[in-house]
Length: 156
Image (cartoon, rainbow, N blue to C red; front, side, top):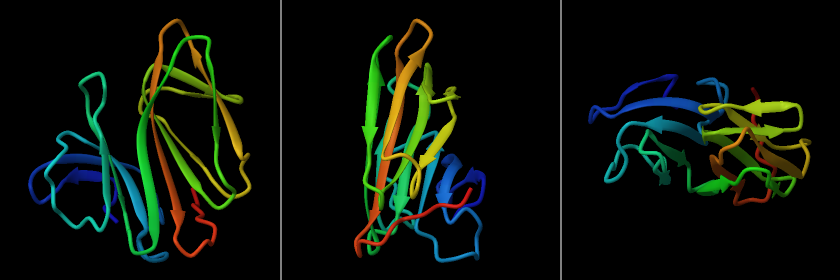
């Protein structure tokens, strides 16, 4: 797993914002989510890659994962002001929520742009997200699960 951030072999700037495992050497690398300056046409060490551009023209997101062990989805979600979005997941699925713009509240937590929330294991199966403030919020939602049906866990 790339630790922290820096520049890749083709000089793309990136910052890893979440990953599993979060510590190199703890167990075999399975996935990571990074904020990247340039997206598209990269054929680096990805066994599986999904990308989504920031709708506001900023950095894009890249979800790298070991497709031999995991299946993944990555999609942008816009939450309009005063609207509630109920995000559901199975107990064996790991969901990564990254705030790209606007502010979103989940329970007592407020996600500002750049904040990441990982939901997995014994966390609630449904997460309610609502905007904070007058404008919309744009999130990227990554979903990962194991092919073998075991729970995908993450240790912060």
